Image (tube, rainbow, N blue to C red; front, side, top):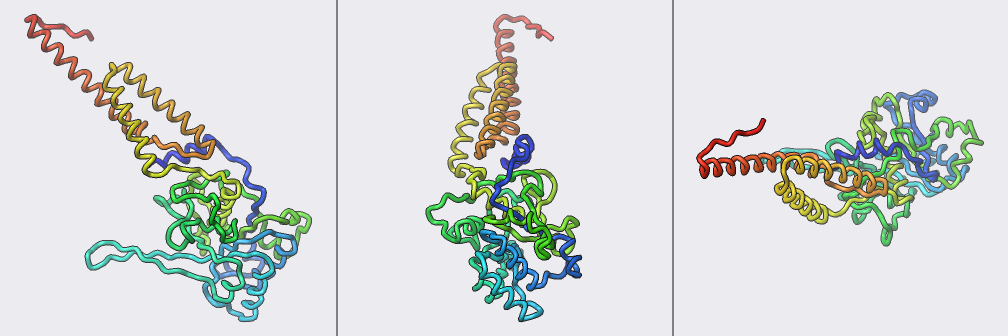
Length: 358
């Protein structure tokens, strides 16, 4: 439940400037329309080859194609053309894990997965083949992809940034959070169709030395695009996978992802804090206990926000807004129970009835 506070932290912080080194090339409805294709069909390999030619001409530093080239193309000539284009600049292409949930003979659910790799011709021509999956926590993308399919738990975008050499580099851990720079569309974009037709050469000079991410960005979210839109920690609008990957890469470039302590450290800190707070509440009178509880919650909220601005996640939401009110209720109940017993003893000793003030 702790990460549930992230949307509020992002909301209060607001948008920040994204890294200048990253640009997204979007494949939208206009791209398919101009090429005379349905959005349910893949773009021809010849189009991707032409795009890479243009990006190489404008001096792009490296490219990530957030597209899985699993099947053979309709035209072997186009496939060979695309494979040659992949060699013109450092290009990484996507692989994908598809998960299945099956019920075994024991009645338990078992999760298995199948890897979708690009065609061998393309994998050999590209600089790297990177896993394009995202991690979903309760259907929300908060963390970096690690685990199955990654190299030594190095997130794929770190492999992209460091050209596959993550050893000795500071990279996000399995518990760290993606630092979104703003709502969907915060990272600068360029139209795939405009690049393909070389329409605005002056504008595209800004691609020189940039890391370029190419992927689906269809606003209507139909067809194949529907599967590549995800809820994130920032706002309520869905965000396309290519922008999530670009954001993760930007975090690694700037080293400004949201760090989180290890599970053990968090548990020790939270348990110590819970013990101290519980002990203090049980010692105080109700009004003082209420004031102490409000002070604790307020102090945590300010500290959590300051830590967030410095790219660190401070847990305590459950402690302050679920456990603390419960302990306060128990403390007040115990206080009045002890008070009633004390009244009872005094009445028994004096043989009189003590009138309670209303």
